Amino acid sequence: MSLTPDQIVTLTEVLVILMGIGITWAVYYGSVNAELPGDSLIPDPGEADDAHPTTKGRTL
Image (cartoon, rainbow, N blue to C red; front, side, top):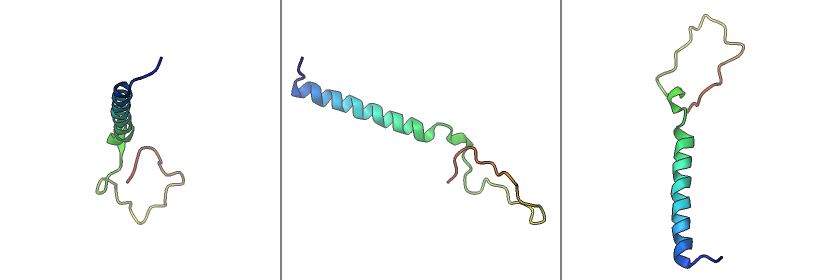
């Protein structure tokens, strides 16, 4: 079975669109938990630093 040039172009277009959707989903999945500028709390200078800082979620 051999593909015609039109079928190859169509298959390539479909795969590129699916890859774009997949990449977009991967970037934005869980981005609700991201720490955005201005959202982080300013720690009290008198308190000690956390021994185990939270590394969950995405940060900028």
